[in-house]
Image 1 (cartoon, rainbow, N blue to C red):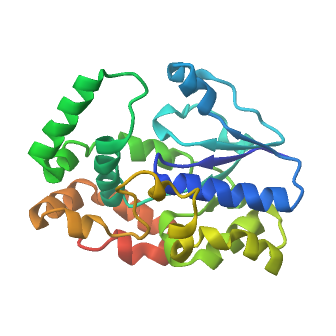
Image 2: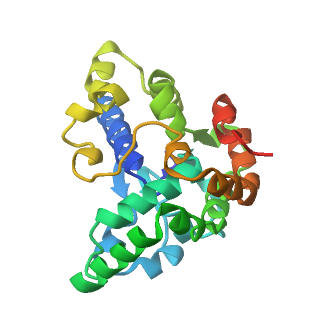
Length: 256
């Protein structure tokens, strides 16, 4: 079987999705080898090698959670894709909180980390968010849609995970040819948004600042900041609405 690549972003929801996918595949006795493709490179400070690394073409289910490291010259017709997209306005807000609390893997001294975080706090979330508006990250994400056959790709967005969990499960299982049973749904019940607070694997129980619904940017950013973001990221948000039409109203809120 051709390898399926879970092409996603660096967000806490990726961990939840990976747990869901892993449980479904193990439940179905899948022979696919599950692998977080970037993990070994990250742990050995070799991330610069990822873009030129060979992806296994068969019998794997890979997590690839940094679009900026994906080689745009890869022959995508050799793979199947599951894509997680997330409203960039929310993702950038999430990144602000993440940067304030998450370890930096030895890249900074403790003093440098404290100084950087205090500077972020002093400037505020609006200033930080406006400094993060480059679209290359999202451009790389969308390159995975350049596939000749639509059957090779399934979009499973953060919005669907949070707002329509059952369809999220059904779409994944249909794509991977897994039968949805009451037993499987029971195994997945602790990944529902309403149950995450009781899930000791949910990253929000370890790191403050995680969220469980789309739209956090509306309560965290000033109106004028949101207007600037909407203008800057309008092409990205329109693209998201196109490829995830069930939730287009969320992506296009306030966007011209």
